[in-house]
Image 1 (cartoon, rainbow, N blue to C red):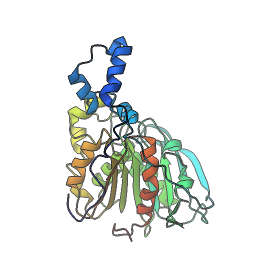
Image 2 (image 1 turned 90 degrees about the horizontal axis):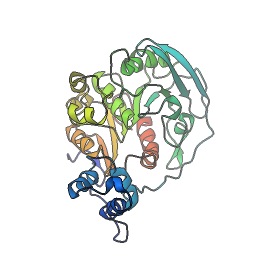
Image 3 (image 1 turned 135 degrees about the vertical axis):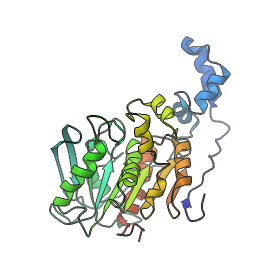
Image 4 (image 1 turned 30 degrees about the vertical axis):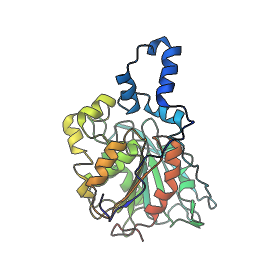
Length: 323
């Protein structure tokens, strides 16, 4: 890892000896449930390394997913506005929420964070443990973050990349952002930033790479990054329409397109996507911020990283460097 990058501890935390071991748990399962009675040692290793389902369950059992809950403090919330618009790119109505920071009102000109949700979520549940209005009213280190609006939107489950008959990336770039700019949000000389969790973390990186010059900052929490189309297709056949679509949206291959963009990426070392995030981090331009710390791919980790991600984006300036 380049010295210019800010990188958290990358070694896995040592688990206390008194915790139940993964193999003990599986042995117990094999003894008590006939369906797993024939599990082999090789199968146990595959589960332990996340190739087969069950790694997150095992991590939760032995404490690898334990993350300290952040102490959250908010200034009096600003207003929020929710609605729908017809998306030609997605060929359907999509919902959205725009939240304004404390002391601001609809119509104010402000920088904008576009927050992309994870798989199975929508504009109403894009963040973990807080609303968009709370996110832009967070007190970080005793002070309110720089005034920034936030918008969330329905992107479906297509990993924020173009599919036949459904293009959530086109919706964000060609419809959502222009709509917000007409309302004074993210319009020049203000800035647009992207933030996302899991699928949304991948989507934020992919949009920034494929639309250079669109955004000044990206914050990706636990981004769902696969290293090959075969790996992605085996896990989720709806993520990419084809191998070509995967290659076009391969954030590792195109990571240098983020040069000049302020980037923050955070991943738990027991996240099943962690290997892909490590490969992505190695490909990032210098001066990117990469945080590797204890945690899994779960709401506890997402919530723990949200305040720092919002604060990081609120500090980015026109040239993409945090102030």
